Length: 151
Image (cartoon, rainbow, N blue to C red):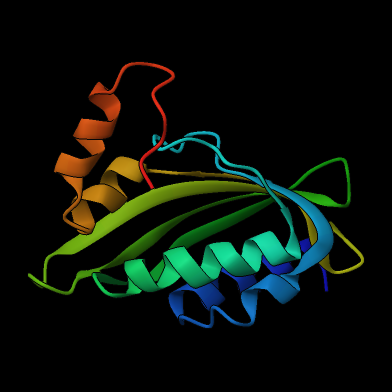
């Protein structure tokens, strides 16, 4: 698969809640980071770590919102393994029926059809608002720098 095809399988798989299939899009050893995550960027360095990540986090998201990728623009780079994908998750808050949009940019390195590196930048405030977690986010942001992360 090309980097663009892998990206499309990833974002549509997330939207379709195909969480068990998502780790197979990644190499055994990978480097996935969320540099703008206000809860902290915990690198995911293996397919097993991604399985755990999707298994724990994805169902929590699925309980509160439904969404699809929208306004997808994929930019190729001088490196044939690397793409920059701009898009939005557009969806609905299940509890209220309110629509939401969360812009995102993913920078992916795909080798032999598998993601070996990814930097995922997403509007975490929009996602927190859609999931009814603004108070939790604000509390996290008010913690002193270096405070231990809540589990």
